Length: 151
Image: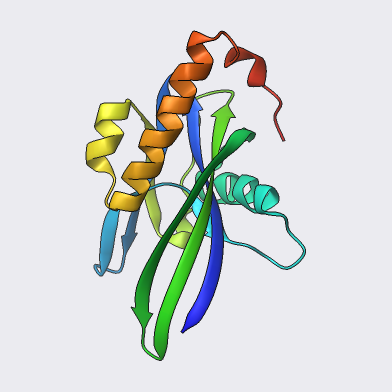
């Protein structure tokens, strides 16, 4: 078994959540959250911010750690056990540009009920639920708007 660690972000701007549409050679299609593999010497936070920037072209800031998800998938030679650490993030605008080299063909910000139905994987739906609840609580306490520190 191969163990792998990734980090990603639930990026929110004005109540809408960022998602990417991936289309990989007719073998994989669906909406996902931005995430990717931790590189040597990187913290989880640095990885999450880098992946959001690379995959979606979005400059974001981490608000808080949300939690982790785990899943397994098969590659020709083995089974990969993937652990993904997720961060709630804030963006300063709606601009996004999908990374074509990684087979992302579309991106955008969607309302919670829209993204919940768009996302392909149940573990990402669960993370979005958690992140959106945190966002709503912070907004009701008047502290969401104070989170704007961009990297």
